[in-house]
Image (cartoon, rainbow, N blue to C red; front, top):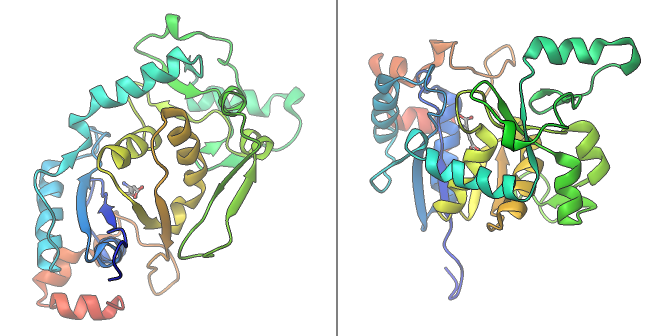
Length: 287
Ligand code: GLU
């Protein structure tokens, strides 16, 4: 390594809601390889306590060790970080950039199909773009039944940002992905930063935690690339550094369908139990 080259710090951030499959193995091996000779971390993304299970967390550790990976202890667990997420929300509230929202999915669907809306709903990274029903509400009247949303137009205005840009080192190195502010507002919109009863969301936690862990290179599947716009905006609002990005390919089954946790036919544990070696799995995935 050349003198002065910065070491990478990467993380693999699974949710313990099912057994790891080949797609996770590929993600973890990619993060570990791109960290080398820097640091590879494991982070447990268990904000959804209704779906997270301790037995799946234990299995994540076993599977990753079996694959030959290691990481420093203690492991960051998002369920223990609620005060950090609350601090970030407080900061955004003080800037007047978030609001409480009581709409359920059905309310949003109904608002979007109302005749005056006309056009077909735009689908963003988190589903239909929110029509703004609760945007007039203030955080002072937020209750336990509310989610918290970002006021996207106000946030971009506050940042004086006309365009969001990031470079992906894997997909198009040297060619930044760009999105005009008005396209973010129209195509992504007022995303949820804290889900009802949860105190946070994937987007908020990932940004707060990547900053807290000093992650320099975020590696994750291409399916999350459209979330990166949201993360860049949150990093700017929270004044945390923007890491580098590497969105990798997704592992698919023989029919071309992306592997999901519920199809545990491809669970690493099953390969292990059948006597397949970690070396064979690494080889199968190109490592
Ligand atoms: N927890 C996310 C997942 O399981 C990954 C988060 C990320 O890498 O940004 O897909």
